[in-house]
Image 1: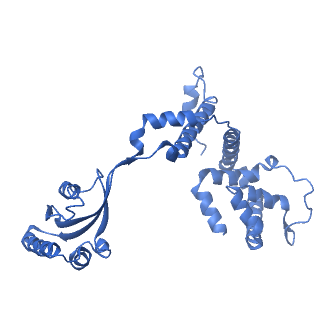
Image 2: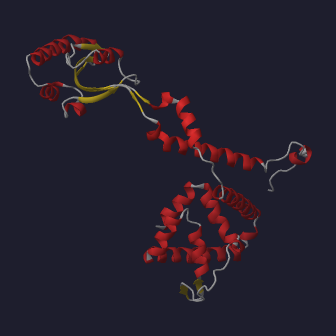
Image 3: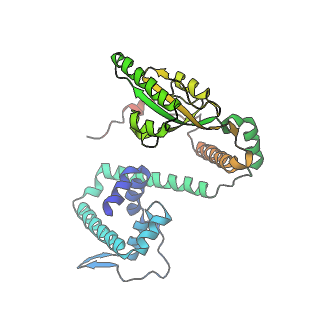
Length: 308
């Protein structure tokens, strides 16, 4: 559990910054009213208090994660042991004077700055007021209708006879002609696909596949042959491509359609909401940017080498 916690911290820079800083900025976490005075863990002279445990839970990324640890005693015990171990290690580090090292002092200072600035942004986001996007969503729909068009879609079955070299084309063409003759004689397309098709994944289901008109990655000859099929003539002739030969059967044609506004309204509003949120956050952060009249001491900056 603790390893998972640490992996999450390593994955999320904001999270490990928070975890580093929360112990340094104890003053940011107010003591809870009526908090129990008895320690949650005691091992000789070593203790873990309720406040220290709660501080650790506050570094978790969301309420659901906190509830998981609060509701599971075994997980809580693991956290207590982890806190105790880290307290002992921190105490030893302080005894050795590590806390006074310039590198650690710099990390503490940067962590505090990062935590406070992230907290400011989180508060701004939490308190953000959103307008009603309904009219704007409808306007977006009317001006971007192409995004909500569903292309024509064909449900097909295929028999694929691949060639790995030009020397195989003669034999594969002859096989395709024999299979086509059997299909025209009334034999099952599904059975012949399972027996002969080189596309074993599709062959297992009788050669089934779906073709969306206009999608990339489909051979032009294959697509043209598929589009030429209809209910009256559902079986293609032999289709030759660079990869080999195909026999295609049309199972069902879905005409092109368009999603109506009500079916996409929530999706558009969510997109507009996110765009609004991003713009507002960017504008808010811009309030704190260095002004255009700021003066940077170039000469002094050149002399700021890191201490050896």
